[in-house]
Image 1 (cartoon, rainbow, N blue to C red):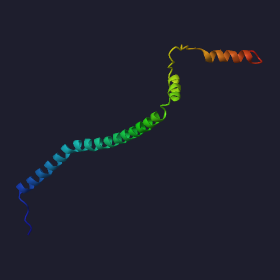
Image 2: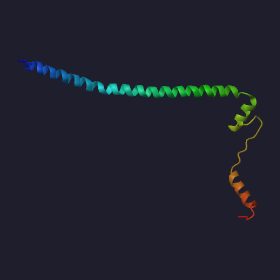
Image 3: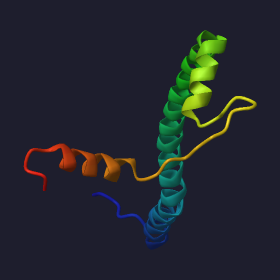
Length: 109
């Protein structure tokens, strides 16, 4: 005949199961945050690697473009002028061209 466990053993087992569930619930959020943080860290590491590659490419490009002619062309594109030159900003060129085209068209609109 099989002996049934006593009531105290039965209660202890359920208390142990309850404690295990409680510990599992308490660890769920920190573990989830840890896993999420690892994923985000991986994404950021990839972004940092891409940025480092871009920096290297730009540094090589800068090293290749340090001739005076290249620097002067880039400076002019940025709006810089040489000493003694005067900068003139002309506005309304697009409208002037449209008017010029209309006056030159055969219909004269």
